[in-house]
Image (tube, rainbow, N blue to C red; front, side):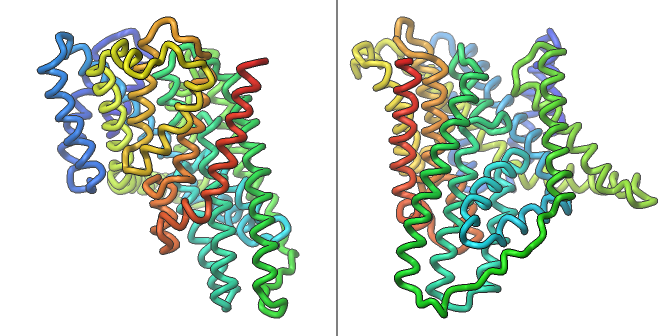
Length: 458
């Protein structure tokens, strides 16, 4: 995994072709050597990738070019996941991050939704899926410790877990550390990153307000069902952990500042710069945490050993999932004639808004039958980008795909958000998504559609 990541970074910053060949070899060894960590999802995607490779070799005259292009996408996505996941290794041992998470989950009802929602959102910038693994158990333990009445506990669980899921899921709409940014910038050429971030932040604000309003309505309904003497009491007097928030903000600023410096110095885009900066920031973060001890050098070495030989292999399924889904999407798109596809669905006659609407709806719809949104977006993004003459704004199309990914995370029981939270809370994925967040997903789609209409017209 380390060799793969180093080779991909070298290919991004060096004008030579051989680092990518090293990445291909490392990826092949990685696939074989990590097999004991793979579950059914990874086994299915690897099998599908092999099947599509055989189909490409048999059915396409330019099979070697197609497979190499798909492999380049696969190793890039694998390296992105490996390198960005390193930030989680600095966060999980940080007392500041733990204090921030505990403070967010212990707020009184009047401000608890927004604290968990926004806390999950911004913690996800560094922790990614680790934000769910950090805040999810804190929510569960807090409710179990303070709410003996099972009816009240169930309602509090619904409101707090939904706040976390919604906040985390919409991080993909704008954050440069999100997987979507690495994928969509690659499959949709011509995207304006700054404009896309502005639209994404606007959508985050609107969906946050919509989620808060839905939670307020849930609270009104709950208060009608729960006697006043059964409601938990909150003092609201917990002191604000200034030092912890300052430490966390410092890490975020260092990450952002170093990324911007690399962008301007090396003339690269955000994602390659972030991939280079993330392991450096993680190393400095680990050093800072251990610098208070006299034997800090040995402690840092021991921590790096744990990260390399335990944490990274345990995270290999996520890297393989991303890599194989991206590979399958490119291969599948290469096996389909884009002009035949466009004629079959009458795509030339679709208005741009219909294309954006389809890009928002197709990923969550297919995710509900088990197809990874990464594979779906790669497939349709590659097809649409291969069609000349289509009247669409690449930035708005990319934003529509981001919206579809976010809707998948709150609206599909097969999404990563639902799978992680179901494991933590013991609540089924269908209840977490369809019952608790069905209305939120529908309202979010409507708001996103209105925003895209406004930006396409003005």
